[in-house]
Amino acid sequence: MKTKLSRKLGILGLTATGICSMMGASIYIMPFMIHRSVPGIGPYVLHAFLLAAVPAVLAAFAYSILASAMPRAGGSYIYASRGLHPYFGFVASFSQWFGLSIVIGVISYVIVPFVRDVALALDWNEIASLLEIGWIRLTIAIALLWTFVFINILGADFYEKTLIPLMFIMFGLGTIIIFSGLYFDHHDFLDGLQAKEGQAYIIKTVSDFNIKSFFSAAAVLFASFIGFDSIAQAGGEAREPSKTLPIAIALTITGVGAFYMLFTFSVYHTVPWSFIADRAIDSDLTAPGLFSYLLSPGISAAIIAGAAIALINDLPAMLLSVSRLMFSWAKDGIFPDLISNIHPVYQTPHTAILLSGGMATFGIFGSHFAGDFFLGIDIMVTSMMVNFLLMCVTLIMIKKKNKILYEKISILKNRLVQVILGWAGVISLVTFLMIHTWKDLTSNPEYWYYHSTIIYAIVMIFGSMVFFVKFGMLKTKGIDTKKLFQSLPNE
Image (cartoon, rainbow, N blue to C red; front, side, top):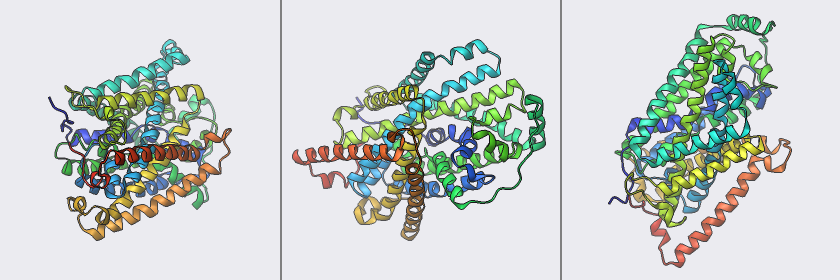
């Protein structure tokens, strides 16, 4: 009987994991609703998107280099715990696990309105009305989440057969918007607006560049590039991981980044930025909604379905990511050994997957009863900025902290290049983290616990307590913790 994870994921499956973790609300909503979050951004959204990609690309370099030396489940936890310090490895990955688990629940909950909008576009009004009922929406969200929990348990082959077709469908339906956006222009949109709403709109052409708004927008849009790290978490199930993990990370960040830029450019080519800025203040905007002024109901339904599939794709990939973090903690003795159980048939960490599904279910209930799910997104952004920052610090420090593993790095082996990339990542991520934190702490939410920074700090304190208690227990048992965290876990 096998007692280890099965290495079956190839480059396509790994790349699909990264792509599907990144693309969702990020592309269909954020480039347009950014005008509500940062009202002064004006026509500079695409430029802010490009700036937001810089720290993400630098973090991707750090992940790729470290992945080539430490191809194990739990990716970021393994990298920082072996190349920096076990405390930083656990606490950073614990906050990442918490943030992503909540966001999985959030995504499950917000998928249902997209399905409702497909029904409305097709004039299936009775079905759309049913999807507005609270308990029905809640039930569908939970059922959807747990469907993908069990898909994850059923093994890498079943996971790939589910995720890869969904990825291609998502790209195909998203391409409709790109071609439509490049085909139509502002005049076509204004004609469509006149025909649908009976009103004329005068385009604003002047907007002063505001450096503060520009960097604030880039910090918000940084969230769009979170997700490629899920490839690293699958390091224990990748074929030829020292080669495939870096390649998959590079393909993901390049492919998704290019798609983001082309998609955003095409939408703003058709829809005036000033119209989006004006409507975003008091209306929830999506790319499919903006193109409903131009496209037939059938095509509108198709692109809304594309947005729904983009959100659905997040679920299996993110569940893989958070469950492998728990699995890797348990392998090191930081979490109960039970969580490191591997299914005897499917060779998946089924206990960790089930527990991750349970945590995500709390995110669904939180979204349902609180009525506001943006807090979970903000917590995830903070946790991932810290996580990416620690990956860059690990890249700088690994030669000093763990020379044996450093020698196993197989890509970009030039030490000067590694240090330059690491420091560039540290500087850019510290800057973005400061902007994001300042923006959160200077806001005025209704309750103190709507500050994501405060919730993140509480999670970090709790994670620290868990670590030091379990770390102390390892020493009490006579385990050589220095030796344990200098080598990779057994497969």
